[in-house]
Image (cartoon, rainbow, N blue to C red):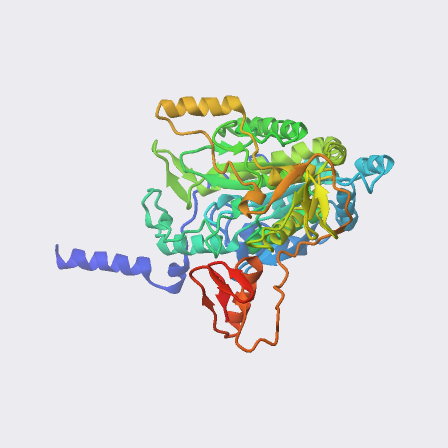
Length: 583
């Protein structure tokens, strides 16, 4: 190579990398049209992401803080139509937040609408006449939750597009939606994971995007962006509520009682788009009205996708059996809850196995269209949604007989307390017996818990406490036939979750409610362990179990030394199992 050619190449390299401005420039997704929705007419006074963040929606993967900045701009522009709220904090200190988009009249009476939704969910406190008044008056609450897995990226930016369209669209039909609905938007359910993904993505991004599946920009270092800070899959946590993200979100949903709820995800790059109806098996405790409305919303979304030429599939892969998903748990509160799944670019552009390209902007567009279809269908079916909620609650109260009894396990007496607290966190009414009583042909000690089957959330009671939710026999037969042919099963995920079994708590489903006074319990999980003989001269023995673990951790944090006993032993106070602690 001549010295002159080498010098020219070196000069070109220097020009391509020099200067802080060049170093900060990010590649962008290809843009086929200036708007995500062809033909849409928008009020130019409503802020766009281009004006606030510096890029059109879908050109970049927005960080949670950038999304927050954009929604704050919308709220500043239209404070009578947009309201932001915080509902918690992640392990890493990022805020968990959402936004309400509504007509001025509905936003002004937001607390009354929430109270009305809760009233319509309890026929014991609301008369039939009052229910009719609420059904005639209330808007439907549409809940849009996005990107619970941090590397499922396009739904969060679709949330921004949805908010902008609701505020800026000049289509009278869109503004009519907001007369009949209020829309709650949670853009990022897992901001810790999303930021982790974006950090690795931007670190690997070149001057131009690289669609190769093995490109550095989509090579996520362990642990990747899917999980939260504690490396937990938040989409399996809705009734266990072990993580702050899920705990805070579940409490928020309980407070609002939305009528429609979308949990927007992504899936593999080669896939198109999924929306309900779901694949089999369907949980037998799902109400028929919920399944019917899911199908109605799905048919409308299919029509909207046909109009833009976007492929999709239904009744495949994603079943509706496990109640711990973001679309599972809310269904047993009476919500029409659904999972949406968009094929993921896992970056700004990806090459599929057939050679075609999938852009990030395309993924954002598809989720955006599905969300608009959901709002459109909810608005058109506002009254039916409210009537179905009233019927769901009445069926809970009138359709259940007897009660579940939960007793203490002598090996871990406080495990039943933790279980009772989790049930309350799922909206279930639980009472603690004030004295011993007889039920199901046996005696139960004072402090046992009674969970009536005659309450508005009866289906939540049954789905969490029933020992075995049966998978339909014809589906099981089909799986056995597949196994015989060497094929994998068609179950998506978890098939067993009985909480009494999980907590090793004695439990019985009694045909008649016990005749015993009970005290309503709250969401506290474990009471502090009681200390016997506080004047002990040598030390204390701590029984294993939930309360013992809580006390041991508190002691260790205070610098108190403790030792675990590796084998059972006896002491003057009696027999002690292995794993007892001495301090």
